[in-house]
Amino acid sequence: MLTLESAPAVLTPPPAAAGARHRSGQWARTTVATFVYARLQNFAPICRHLSAEDLTGFLNEARRALSEPVLKLGGEIAQRRPDSILAVFSNKPDARKPDHAQRGLHAAILVVYEAVELARRVAQQLADPQAPPLTVAAGVNLGNAEISGRGARSNGMVHATGEAVEIARLLEVTAGDLGWSIASSGRTMRAAAGRAEGGRIGSVAPPDNSFVDIVEVTGLVPRRGSRTKPEMYQLLREAIAGNGQARERPHEVSLPGVPAQAPAHLLIEGYRILRQIGAGGMANVFLAQAQEDGPPQVLKIMPLDSFSGEDGLQRFIQEYALLAQVDSPHVARIHRQDFSAGHAYIAMEYFPGGDLRARIAKGITPREAMGYVRQTAEGLAAIHAQGIVHRDLKPDNLMLRQDGTLALADFGVAKQVAMLIMNTGHGDIVGTPSYLSPEQARGERVDARCDLYSLGVLAYELLTGRRPYQAETAQAMLDLHINALVPQLPAPHKAFQPVLNRLMAKDREQRYPSALALLDDLERREL
Image 1: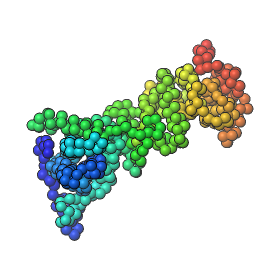
Image 2 (image 1 turned 45 degrees about the vertical axis):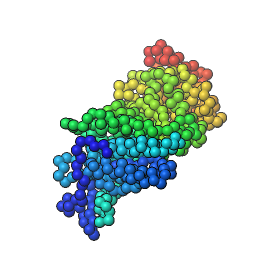
Image 3 (image 1 turned 90 degrees about the vertical axis):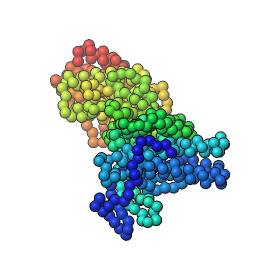
Image 4 (image 1 turned 135 degrees about the vertical axis):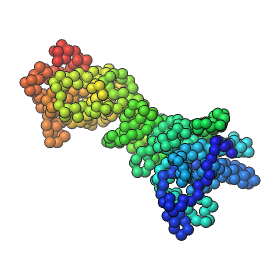
């Protein structure tokens, strides 16, 4: 047994004055505590590989590896099975300040070390290259729960119930999904005040759809004045890393990069979820951080089972593939696209200024309106240069940065002429009715000029504060885009009317041939 620093005594049942409730000789308390759930992986297969004589010794050693670190650090055992343990760490009545988070994390680290040592001995016994490796996963969580005694026959064990306990169990499963040795909730790591070293981060959603930020535990930090040799802490780090590497194995996939069997819970590795900021269609949108104190990013997350076969998944992948080709200050930046535990996601730039729709509602000057038209045209020029047509240009998809610059976003229905995976059937209508070009309204094939028509609609709205066409139904709106005359601007904006006439021409051949041509014309007219 590896011993680091001093360990407190095992806790005893609290007195009635401390808030305990005595019932039929038992006691109970509701308290904040730290819960550790650890489980040995490949336990049953290894048992089948061992002889009867070796099996008895293995079971005893497994029990010791799981239990001794808990008891050594003053924990109480709430559940013990041959392959797992649930432990409770709460404060001693005479404690100067809470230290249960520190002791719980310390115990989890020692459990991993003991399990790695046991795995090494078992591997020598088996001498079978086909036998799976013995590994361990642990979840550590701090929270409120009810802890009660089980009576004289409980062998000193307690009973623990509550959400905090269930989250600790979920974190053990999460550690398994990610190939981590120990997954701790973020609040536990913060309460431990730097006692444990942290590695990768992530977020996991319990069944109530809330989010728990999680941290990979990678080592133990020495206490001030500790006499333990530095080599001992290095041994712990190596045990945790080695256990995690032994647990990682390639997933079988049915689609490129997608696990064939994905966990039911929402799990996003590498991001701390801050809050949900939107939902629509198949996707949920969250504000997240990729690292502590890092700039916020937007995560667009969709469950894999929401995709209609491989084509649906490819549509999602295309949004990233399209934007990855574009380098422009007026196109939203995509940071990452990946898959995580049954979900696909895209991490993209966060726009604290909101969208252009909200900005229009506050009122803008003609000068500001023309600035937004130019920036939108520059963004369109950048995507059109890559053969990409946005097809859903509207104020809601034009985002504002802190410095006031504007960027095209939401390429969910974008289409690249050279790519077939996003093709819709002939006659399908894609986009928002109020901003659709006539050819989109008729369900015809589109090119970059349909975005220029939508920019004309947007320009009218920016200058006047209202949309050019009003209708009670979507079909009536589509008919107006096809047949109605180009709207006339009020007298103060008449200088822009010739530009609007070309942008919103019903025949695309009469529109500007490109966004760059539009920008050149605006420059010549000094608009």
